[in-house]
Image (tube, rainbow, N blue to C red; front, side):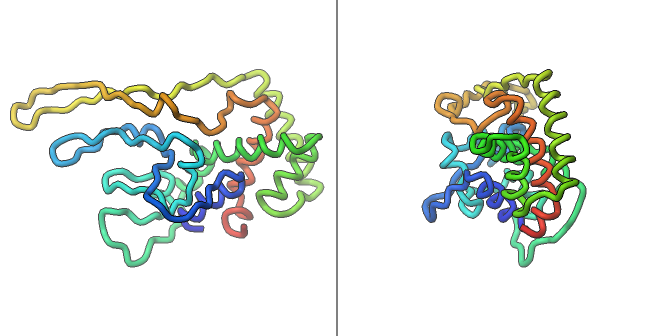
Length: 234
């Protein structure tokens, strides 16, 4: 799958994709460290990137995502999305280690796995049913007997772990400190940029919003989302 197809497929899998067509560009959520980094333009600094406040606004198809020349979504970039700073006759096709890191460790994939696990937990009665449902939704088949036993064991171990290690809530950033050096005098100066997204921003589902059973199932969903069956055959 291309970078855009991968992002859209994960959102569609969890039922979060907004299929609305047309309209102006949207601002999806990207890695916060990248979003808040300084972007120098015309001798000054651009405002911090701020995603749109509501999930239905952010989770449009990647085709509609607004693009800055000086700011790329690292997840899409690692999956060979062409840069906007130069023309591209044909995009590269690579299979490299950072892609595995982005899928397995990236916040976007973790959020999708948690959303899928939450939906499955709400619609199943037993842990075995939940595991089978996860396989059906992600790789479109039931698990084999050996896979089911391994998956159940993994989910049970993860549930025990998460019961003993509850997650700490991470607040949204409310401001970012900027520093620059004056071009003519060489003097440094700083200022604080206030972020308005904290006022009405609706976050995606986070680990502290759900119980240990949901977080444990999300671990399995994350593994399945990283499988060759999903990436290449889905």
